[in-house]
Length: 87
Image (cartoon, rainbow, N blue to C red; front, side):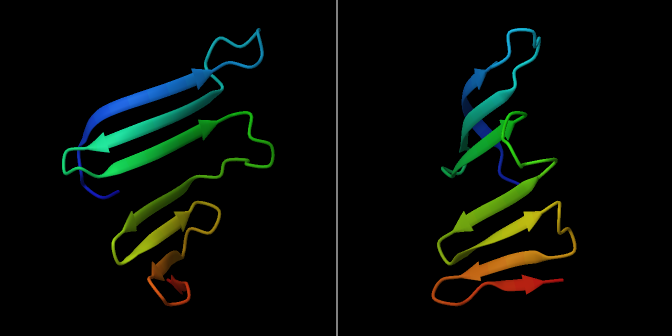
């Protein structure tokens, strides 16, 4: 999303149901080459989160957020200003 390359990864995975072969939940910490950091959460056990892909990027002057469930809009957050949805 940002074009920055990942340099380090730390992950914690869990399986909650014993009959499952694959992990059902993952929490991942990312460190990027430019010094930035990120968090990735992937879950098949999060109630109410059905196919909800959400991307967020935070920076010194604001943030952006895109959601798969509302794909035509990019939410833009600037420090000290209300959120603006951009088509």
